[in-house]
Picture 1 (cartoon, rainbow, N blue to C red):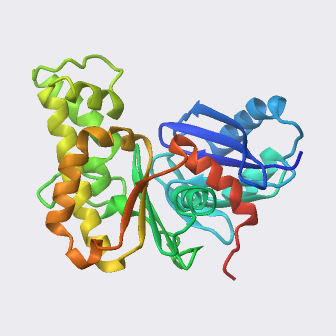
Picture 2 (tube, helix red, strand yellow):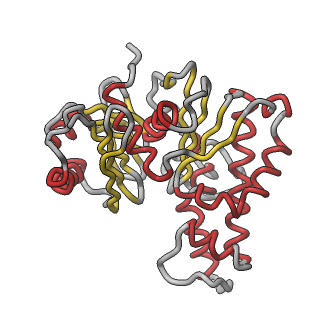
Picture 3 (cartoon, rainbow, N blue to C red):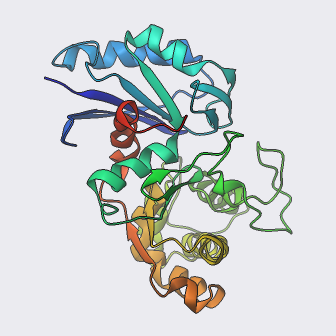
Length: 311
C-alpha cells in the first residue's frame, strides 16, 4: 500500500503518522520526546518502533519531518531547535540515512498547516494563519493556498514575539518576555510549580501538571490555575490582534495541546481579542480549531514529499 510517513518532533512528544495519498491516516503513534539526544539516536529509535508495524518499509511515498526551530526547507538543514537542543544539523540527510527513504524537512507549524489546508477545516481558505499552541508556540502562513517561506528559515516563530516587556524571563532565543516563555504550555506548568513552591494553595500537586490539568482545576474553582490560564489567553489574544491587523487572513486555525483548554479560556481570549483588533480586520476572519487535534503536525508532515516547493 502506498503511504508516506510524517514525523512531528515536539518538545514533549513525537508523533508519527502513516498517511495515504487521499489523506486517510493509516496509523498514528505518539511517543515521548527525549530532548537533547542526538538526531541519529532519535531516528534510529523511531525506525525500530515504526518499521515492524508498517505494511512496507521504507515508506513508498517518502517521509516528511516537522521540527520546531529554524529550517532551510530547500536543503532540509536545521539551524536551531531550542526545544530539542539541536543546532546546525543536516537533518534531512541524517534522517534519510536512518529511515532509508527520501526525507523533506520543514518547520513543524508549516507541516501542521498543510493537514488542515488540504484535508481539514482550511479546505476553503486562501489566506490561512495556522497557530500551534503547545509546549511552545509557532505559526505557519498560507498565501494563495501555498505555504509562505522566508529566506532566513525562521518564518513562523510567532512564539518569539514580545509579549510582556516587564518580564525578566529569558528565552532560549536570547530575548526576554517572549510569548512562548510567558504563555506556552511549558510556561504555564512552570508558573504553577513556582506558585506551589511559594506556598500558594492548589488542588494540583506533584509532577503530573499539564495545561489540560490546569483547565480541569480551573473549572473546579482553582484560583492559581485560572489565573495562569487567563493570563496566557490575554497574552495570546493581544499577540494575535496585531497579526490580524497586519495580515488579515480569512482563517485562523489553532492546534496543539493548549487548545484543549479553549472551553475554559474562550471568554477571556475572545474578549481580549476583540478589544485589541480593528473591527475591519475581524469582519471576515474565521477562528477555528484544527480538524486533526494532536495529529495535525504528523499528518501534515506526511504531505511534505508531495507539496509544491518554491524554487
